[in-house]
Amino acid sequence: MKFVDEAEIRVDAGDGGNGCISFRREKYIPFGGPDGGDGGDGGSVYLVASDNLNTLADFRFHSHFRAQRGDNGSGNNCTGKSGEDCFIHVPTGTIVTDADTGEHMGDLTRSGDRLLVARGGFHGIGNARFKSSTNRAPRRATPGTPGERRTLHLELKLIADVGLLGMPNAGKSSLIRAVSAARPKVADYPFTTLHPNLGVVRVGDQRSFVMADIPGLIEGAAEGAGLGVQFLKHLTRTRLLLHVVDIDPYETGINPVTAARKVIAELCKWGHGLEEKPRWLVLNKIDRLAPELLESRCREIIDGLHWTDPVYRISAIQGEGLDRLTRDVMRFLEQQERRSDAEQE
Image 1 (cartoon, rainbow, N blue to C red):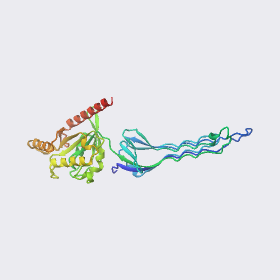
Image 2 (image 1 turned 30 degrees about the vertical axis):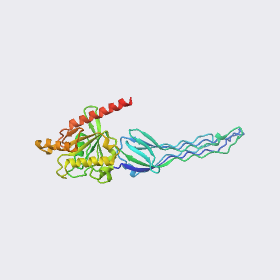
Image 3 (image 1 turned 180 degrees about the horizontal axis):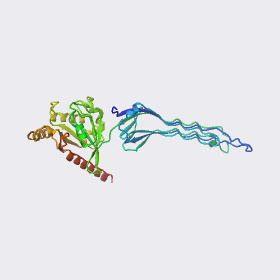
Image 4 (image 1 turned 45 degrees about the vertical axis):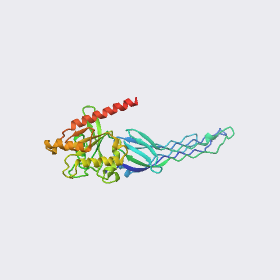
């Protein structure tokens, strides 16, 4: 199934049931009076975040959702039954916007989060409620109000702790395959990754983090070139970016420093705070260079980028350097978590 991260749906809340005009008519009870009951409230429409979903693909085939209408009131002071609410399950990380007004309605960032997107109509009032000392036999009732109707734009931003970015064929998919159970496609040509992939990286017992791999970036991505720009938004929720660089790109012949600068430039052009996130440099495919050339190549890349943040040398295929990388990432995320908790306290 093709990855779908945007969808548009129509939601209709239920109308309220109408109030009833009725009078009590029983033998031996003259002047029984009004006994028309109220209608029932219409059902509302809710979006519910679920970890069991990871795309919005289902909404391509089913895009119209309705809650149940409230029943009308009846005689003998019987109130109509309220309509049942409609619950729509969406992936965790879904942003909800009113497609007609542009109003931001909510952001479902945790599993189980519930968002009211269309409120059901209010019930109508039966004539028994209009009885008074001066109006003993009211012949008035009110209809139920219509439920809200909206067209919603849904946008999915994957929730991950760590995001991978880099040029096509830098080895991002190989890295996530090596450290998690994710199995993205890996091949010796560019753009083998056509949609984001998530993987859970386990570090010892009871310690893990989520890693996201997006399609590779090329020059001009911020203006719409290539595939990566469509998915850069999935990195905005991450707490750490790993910039993967191929230190020996013999297929493309592009200098690693030039390739890394292009990716950094696209991040700055796209904005949305991505350029300000902590970013570590991961020099991949060190198994391709002889030991006497490896140190000089790595130093050339670090100096060329004027890199001062952490640098890691790995071979995703051979597994070299991955233990140190994942342990340090886990430690960094735990430190951020403790710092965040301290600030909240």
